[in-house]
Image 1 (cartoon, one colour):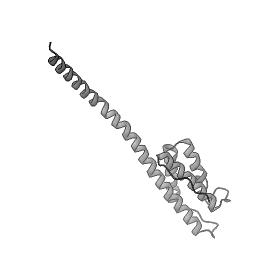
Image 2: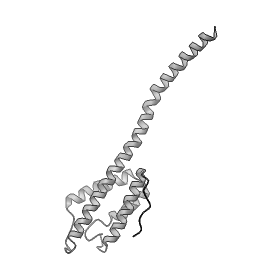
Image 3: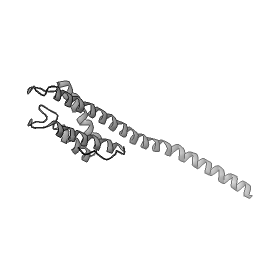
Image 4: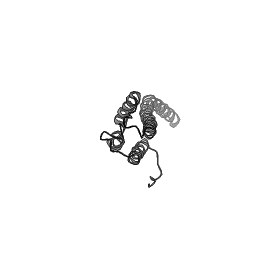
Length: 146
């Protein structure tokens, strides 16, 4: 056999192997990257909804500050429970712990014991949101003091 025919056969074999490798590996790699991307999307959606719900809660709390009987609506609590489950399922234990610090304050009079303060709530909210955004992979500027 000549060098030309050997090179042609070798080239054909390499081409067939490369094609087969591509056929089998590409879908697996795409699926792996798609799962990671989808997790990041779900985390981002959960973070946005938690942020919206916490803003709704603190706004309503401040608006009803003089009403000791104030309680968020049942619909609010249902939606918040859905998002609480999302945070627990989608994020790490460290982020879950940060979220729990603010989650326990969401209730009548800022917490089950009623002794919470707005500034404590805001600090806990900011800590939880920073943990969530960081876990999504966003590079955040340093936290502001105050």
